[in-house]
Image (tube, rainbow, N blue to C red; front, side, top):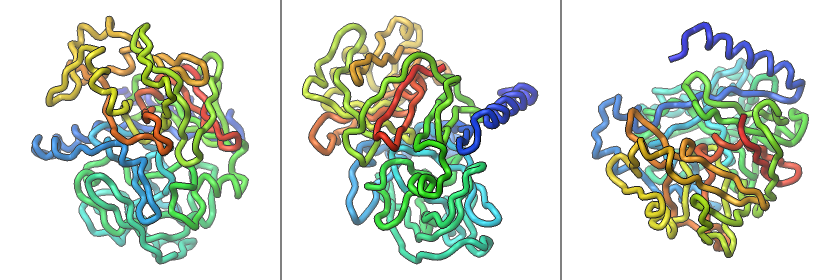
Length: 395
């Protein structure tokens, strides 16, 4: 655990850097939670219950007009979250800044479920700027539904103020896993196509209300995250101090998710050919693991010499330095993940931080999810105006 003095110094440095970024560019520090599995074990949840909770992460990327399929299918892993405020006077919430969904929702006093009561709840009667929409909506997860009623209010993120922002106030939340989570809600940053129809997303309103210097936001995830500092999200620009080298730009292939093309995937020096007909990758800050197309998972594990047991895809920690790197070719550039990045060491148990999904891209290509594991290695830039994603080696 950090001592108070270095922690205070880190936040002072961040505050000074915020000033240097200039008006219209905001830096939000992110915290990293324990894994939800750890949090639930600490609360005495039986191991058998934990093992029965995991769903297909690809379900997040299937949607229809009737329901929104949201994040958290990988909820037994860790999350990164930061603070926003809603209402007048402001009520504070910790939210995931999630590029894999597009809605904003927080717990509310309308909800009396234990999962809501255990978190910060928005009280509409205490906000002078709140107005009720009255429409209810269901956000569907692999393990249960979250019901919300829609309203408008002012959303504040440091010096960014967005007025008349639509958001969801929860009516019902399933206790497992929401009761155990460190964060309160989710702030979606994907395209409007997957948001609740008929309302502007927060990002849309930020731009329409001239709250961003540029139509860009960017993420930095620390390679050695802690609860007090896990990274940063920068709204309205980029910070060259957080990356090195050139930026590799990849066009968005479908303006729904931040979905890009992947030309090749290699294990060590051996190209797999799995993307010879083209692959797609969703750049998703709300997913922790690296998600591999299900049809390639067996071959991937075999190539790494990994076996699955109750702890996950376990490897001998002594062998990690000699394991091969993983490489993605994106826009002609090789982006490499060394084993120190894709293997996690949890109290001496080393696991490969991957999962699989059988969901394909909407046009049939194998679908990868580039989650926090990938994004620890590469600073990511989401260029709304030019519909592209940039990657540069994290500092």
